Image 1: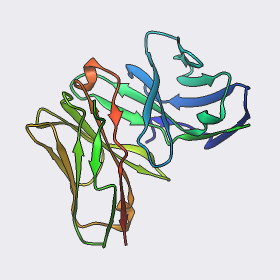
Image 2: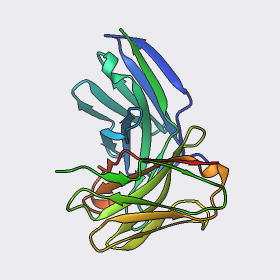
Image 3: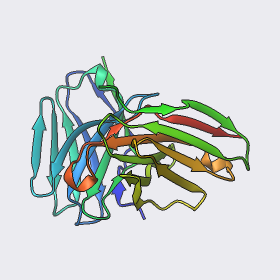
Length: 113
Length: 115
């Protein structure tokens, strides 16, 4: 049972344009939603997160939007840069005694120069 | 501060063997989590340790086990290796247990190949 779904395995965008990475989840009880970026041969790097009580969080070129009614999360990167080319993982976090971080399968973003 | 370190970086084992992977968290971090990454399943949570106690466990068979030492270093053991255990195993550390923070710092991973 996949709790976190990243249905598009890959995305290709032109440098300078907007990249929109999508993520759907099934459980309304998650406390935080996170995005990680991963380059080959490296561990994932935390990118940005959003609390379940908010609908938007912005950090520089990265903005995460949360639509709780649709159980949908998206990451906007604008403007996209070639160095953004990586695998992006959406993750959901339940806190408390049995806290657990659950990741999606990832989306490979390619930013063309 | 040094980041999360994992040893070895690459490992080749034969079916039926066992393997032990090591993770040293960032200094001061007490929570260590392990993940398995495969092309088909993405990142999957294995277990989390805090202060030498396993606090949470993912949906993996009992062949996968771990432990944490008093200095917060952690080891993960896989017994009776199967071909499907070939994966990148990632370790992540955080300052506190998950309920109090949302940032985990990942190591580079150990690439395990089972032949």
